[in-house]
Length: 227
Image (cartoon, rainbow, N blue to C red):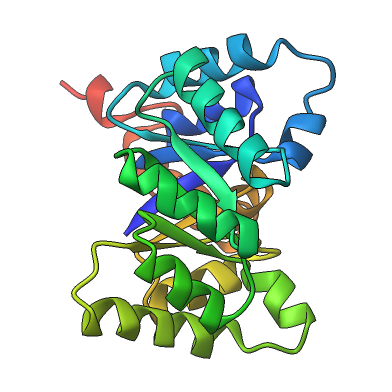
């Protein structure tokens, strides 16, 4: 499984790139808005310099018509780099764009997926990743666990190379559920990681271990201090 950060904040990316087995970074216009007034392409290049070429960078088109999305994709590839995964919404125009970008050999992430049918179409169109929105599906009374499970089965049935990049989470349990349902990867905000590591029992276990050690070897003594 792969873990990606759903953020464009440079400090967050630097911090968690050193902590988790980071596979990449995803962004969208709403995430970019959180960073305020930035030089977009310079900012994306800074993210690339932090994560390196070995990790994936996913950047979303903003235009809503076919020609505009194609031009957005071309500009992203030209001004950031050709390894970027172009995020394209999985609607009528978007599917047309996905097919054309794949014809050109570009990396594509089909995003804004709420239904199995959208996913099946994106898989058939050759998308490298499909991004089902877990929490948003749940809010619409769509079972994301069942949907992701069926998406995974479709990928297996058709021997497709498409991967499921689950997105839109409000808690750690949802991330677990997506991965357990068959998603090969998940992208999440840093708030989810803070939830995961902020569990009081984890800190208590660390404190208890340290206390037991220091009761024998002395306060402030670690293994590297022993002679």
